[in-house]
Each structure stands twice: as C-alpha cells, then as structure tokens.
Length: 237
Ligand code: HEM
Image (tube, rainbow, N blue to C red; front, side, top):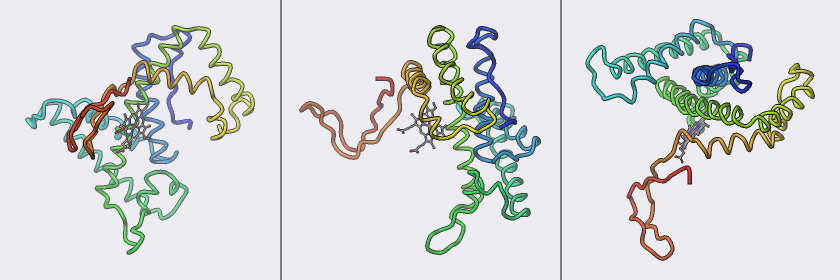
C-alpha cells in the first residue's frame, strides 16, 4: 500500500479542512486503484487514469452539450481515453500470462467465464465499464465520508482521542504496522465503526435515491403508491 497517499493531519488541527477533501479524494482513488489493479500498476498508467477520471468527474453531470471545449465534451473524450488506457493494461496482462495480479478485481473480471460455454463472460468494453463504474461508485462517496469524519472528530477532541486509542491498540498489536491488518481486526473497531455510521447518518453524500415499486404499496392502511411508480426515498431518515 505504499503507493497510497496519506490524509493530512486535519484531525489534529494542523491542516485546513479545505485541503482534507482533496487529500481524501486522492486517498480513496489510490485505494480503489490498488483494489482494482493490485499493487503493481505502473506510475504512468495510474497518473493517466487519475487525470482522465477527474475530467470525467468534472463533466459528467454538466449540461450534455457535445460542443468541443465544454466540460461535457471533455468528459466524453476522457471516458474514451480511460477505455484506451484499460485496453493497454489488459493487453499487457494478456501478453504476460497469469501472474500475481490475477487476484485483483481486473484479473477476476478478465478471467470470468460463462459457466456453460466456458467463453469469456465479459467483453473488454464491459470490463472497462465495470472498472470505471466501481471507481465512480467508490471514490466520491468514500472521500466525502472521510472528510466529514475528520471534521466531526476535529470538533470532538474526546472522541478523537478514543478513536486514536482504539486504532493505536491495533497498530501496536501489529508490531507498529509491520503485520497487515486482518479482517477480524477491522470487525473489532467498534468505536471507529460507530463514528463512520454516525458521520454517514449526519452527512451522507447520497441523501435520497429512487426505487421502482414492484407492487402497489400500502402504509398504515392507506394506498401510498402504484406499482411501476418510481418514488424517491430519503437515506437520512
Ligand atoms: C461511504 C461510501 C459509500 C456510500 C455512502 C455509498 C452509497 C451507495 C448508495 C446509496 C447506493 C445505492 C443503493 C441502492 O440503490 O439502494 C450505492 C450503490 C452502489 N455502490 Fe456504493 N456507497 C459507498 C461506497 C461504495 C464503494 C467503496 C463501492 C465499491 C467498491 C461501492 C459500489 C457500489 C455499487 C457497485 C453500487 C450499485 C449497486 C447496485 O447496482 O445494486 N460503493 N452506494
């Protein structure tokens, strides 16, 4: 994980919160990259992915104007570029044959086979869609909650000390980080987990979303909505 950037010491008051969001975005992107590509993605590919991904992120939600120079047009071009970079990475892997990268998300997607015919389950376009989709789903959401966690911990010094104590106990048990974190240890971070959940409750990046009703819905004896409607529900309440 040495390629993963570090968060600034905002929680100790040594860095402005404005920069925390930028660092959190970088950190969550780096973690996403390690999860998808394993630890061995070359620097050039990583930086090209980062640059193009950030252009997609800036433009995807803009007015869909394909006129050259608009943010939307740039996002479309950058998305094509992401596909080209992923093609290059997949071609390199195929040329290299099976190796340690096989266990990461990209390796698994590339190896997935149709159970009946044994042919590749996904085309390269579909693999690229999945990779970009996971990055998209994981990055901004995680960066947002990390930033809010820093803010809330900064505002509550006693809680910050308690979370640090919980984390330090595990760090010490792992010989100062020499041994990797285990799954069981992540499950034992009771207070840290509560802080994450409470921060998500207080400031979720996704405050509402849509659901399609698969049946007519009644609540407390009253007809609420029809099948096929797409009601909005609040994640916060
Ligand atoms: C704090 C961080 C996150 C938040 C707040 C969040 C929130 C959400 C929400 C509200 C949905 C929609 C669920 C629904 O339709 O009911 C969703 C879907 C999804 N999220 Fe996240 N997410 C987070 C992190 C992640 C991460 C880290 C990944 C991947 C590594 C991820 C992958 C996905 C995917 C693939 C879907 C679509 C699932 C589907 O189609 O059913 N999310 N997320």
